[in-house]
Image 1 (cartoon, one colour):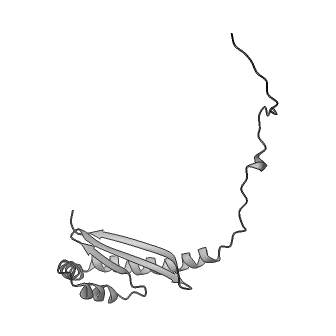
Image 2: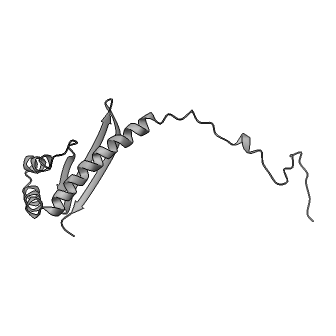
Image 3: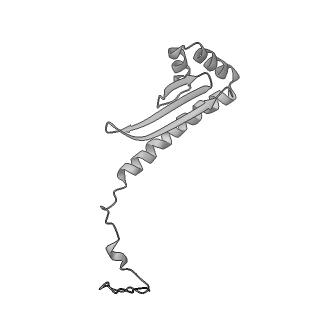
Length: 122
């Protein structure tokens, strides 16, 4: 035998009061977002310069790989700097490739970041 119980629960046939579930957020202030995007443009331009230099100048690519494989950090950084960039990335490498980490800083705070990895070995 089945027993049916009734409770004093309000019945909402087709809808729920959505206003009770909406989270309130503070007003938006896009100033940091705009600044970050503007700095990102500069990082992207510098990254493009480096990538174009590697892809269009075989001698540059060969020197970069040679210095990296010999763990000559200063020479690798100097090659990257002489491409003519404004934002100097943190350059790391391993036997498989090169990693460039660009950071945009505004008011002593990191506001954007661009990481690029290019491989030279499978």
